[in-house]
Length: 440
Ligand code: PLP
Image (tube, rainbow, N blue to C red; front, side):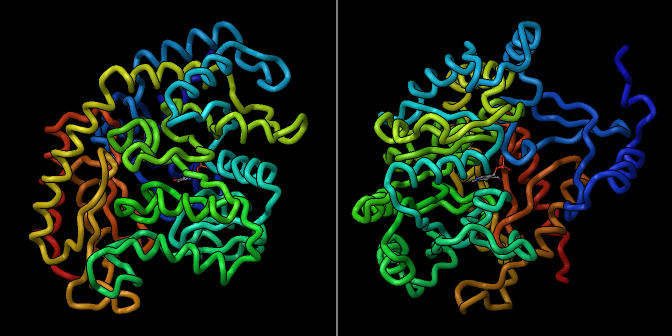
């Protein structure tokens, strides 16, 4: 007999169970979810919220998308587990073939795992195996996951405190963060951060580089979009040093930026491409895809995952990709362009430093205009204001992301199905919150 977990529950009871029985790793819990539908989540007390964050950029084709749920249910009825690397099964075979078709350029062979961090770490292992080299270069302010390998790449001490040592042989280089650029000296962007990759390789590595790992649009760092030419130049430098370019599309992939892949905006074909989050619209799945010549460096026994490529998750992923290709990505591009223009209006507020993004991955960087920021570049970040806006929106029935390296960026990453009216409602609520701000 199935158990009704929700009949006795309220927001308070589920939060109390969290306090009592889950490890206390969260900073601040957001809306408890009893059920969710498309762009709406409902809590245990019957309140409805517009979801502008998709569980950190995951439910790209909408909560409870019919086609995805149906595909998962059909597979559940067939079988739930087949260990992909012991028993070949159709959903993994079909999804791998589909990824060969829809990933950039000649990327062809995939490995399936369960999460973003596993996808990144698997990609590093493959790069090491293919190149025969060991070191890795990543970006300051980046985020690639929480397990010890990915944590080493993540360029943010906030995630690393008390957790060192991570893997060795990782060097970091400045991110392509024009608003707070320490390299272009306040002048126009000259892509100096791409050129700096060469300097960091020469000064901080033994030139035994297996991979340069980057996010094509930095998510946790604060929705940072690199300048034109940056990604291809970084790839050129990586290749000149015998290294591969790993483009981490965990957060930016699956239609989020108005193209299926953020790499498509920059005409770059990654050497290895980790994916997760939006891949199966909420079912746990990760993948990394490489061209055949690179992928075939792996030999029998080099890698495996018990649950990776779970048939139910793969069936959901196939349905997700079909939904994305059936107009959702195109619509994302249009509504993203509209949102980007609308957010630019917010720059009239002196506490809005910059608005930026691609598709429905947009950020609003909040500042204290009276204070100078780190390294004397741009006004100081204002995380308190960002928190105020986040709370104000929640009171107004809207869930938005608040993050960034300095915790001062509002993050628009809604289900890609969100109507324009709901985007407008969110921007108007932000304006209310800014009007309501009376300093610290
Ligand atoms: N890579 C990027 C770019 C991410 O944004 C994240 C998560 O936010 C990860 C990797 C890690 O993914 P997961 O939390 O599924 O391990």
